Length: 459
Image 1 (tube, rainbow, N blue to C red):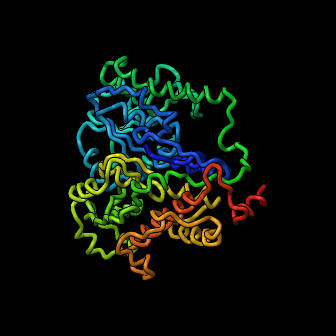
Image 2: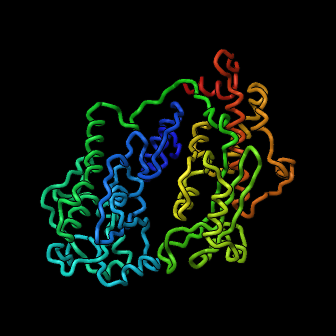
Image 3: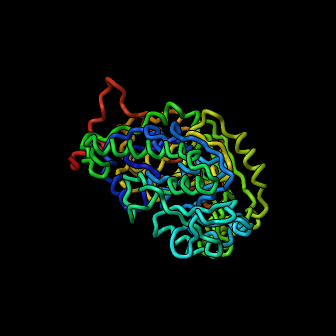
């Protein structure tokens, strides 16, 4: 499970509502929210109990628009999890992607995209061995098709649905339009001549639709319309103190090409750093790029190209990482990007905490990067440290041989990652120290702190 924060869902749509939602809920109760790392949904709305895996002769390759990945009621991942003979790739540009180019070069590959020039699936002979499905709104899917010559060269197939779709929780351009999972079920049933065999895949989809409609009918207010709670700011989670021995700060860097370049494709992990806060144990590895090194990568990472190119192979690097982490560890990251990079390399899912959302609640504002957040927390806490009580030894102590803690500006990790992992450590220590210093039941709260004074003005 990934621990997120209620009102600050890391998978919120990029269209703007997510940002409004977070601003309006920063004054609310900071409650840990568990997410399923398989279906990427909140645990209370997890699809996994309803998923039914169905084998297919046809290989299905989902190409998902990046914005569609953030839509909570998107059905692409649900379809992918229901089809063992499928894969899911996210992006806008696939020209030059070796894997997609190889798929497109095989005979028997087609792309599902209705419209002019598409052959009805019922008249397709022979049936394709590999079916590429573009996932997104109609506008997004058309953009993906138009921007990728590798997809435009493929034969296109369409379908005529036997009945209207059940996607009643999302507006469709026309009554005959289907969701991605409905379209795939319809097409596979036609291609393989067994429509009934693929129908169980829709159980998870139907359950999601009914759950969304029931929630809407219950009268529960939408998140973006929730009024601000004007209560005293809740304490930072005590979990940072109780689980201090398990906290591992993690930061990762990637080799990412500009969209539209010849070598564009998914970002790949090239540097991984981590610190175990309690013991000071550290981990750093450079991983040789599997594709051409992007021209701007050494500059942005502040690491020489020669050092990146001389990195370890991905297999040995992931084996070292697996030896460093423990089953009970709580991975603390600034945003979800490090976890996305690790997941793409096949690293096992682990419990994680997005520290950026915790800091946003603590400061009741957007924080910018992790280095800015560390400065803001240091400035805000110094004024109240005399009243907040002493820091706990575990949160105060610096890792062994930490020259930064001794006052010298020397970083233990190379490049930009060195600055940011150090800032992430500072942020975690500041949050844990504040949480440990908060009064327990029966103790009097501080009479006046900068937060109390500000809260009076907000009220």
